[in-house]
Image (tube, rainbow, N blue to C red; front, top):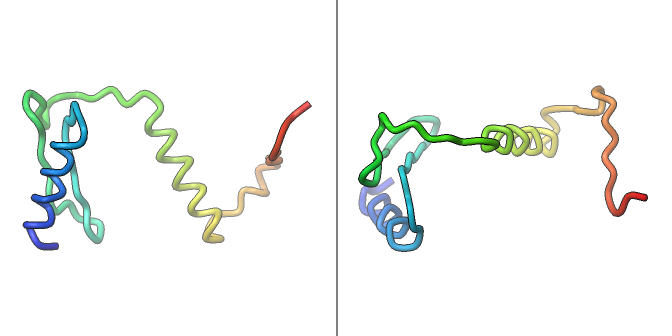
Length: 84
């Protein structure tokens, strides 16, 4: 990935999103760029609250859609539409 594209991406983030803390870009499983907006740094702890659950449920959803995981063994029943 050309460094010009990464710089354009970071510039766009900086212009369009208020309150950016950091960015990390991965390609083929490796970190190719990372950086922080002042006053934040790599040492600054971020409270994520439920973000980890969101990432996990999204990953499980992709795995189910791709046929890599079968959740039917869990006995869950998905209800669509209105209840009651």
